[in-house]
Amino acid sequence: MHVSLTPALEQMIQDKVDSGLYNSASEVIREALRLLHERDAYQQMRIAQLKKDIQEGLDDLEAGRVIDGETAMKKLMQRYAE
Image 1 (cartoon, rainbow, N blue to C red):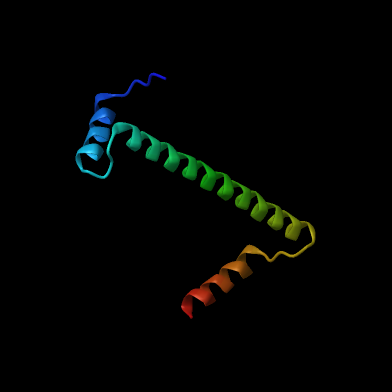
Image 2: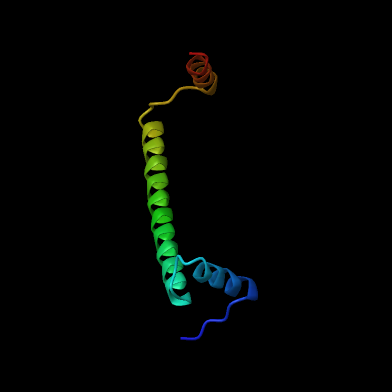
């Protein structure tokens, strides 16, 4: 596999190796890819949670479990004041 990097990215990798935290550029790249994978998984989890929250809100709306905006704001202001 051949990967082209900008000079800035090459320098970033070299700086990591020079710091002693990594033994090689390959280790830096593997760590970066592992972190990218973790970030992607976290984003997918957040998206799933947001979809769930939206569905709960829609279900509440459909079931009539709602309050008007003015009442909601009053409740929020009361909580904030406490």
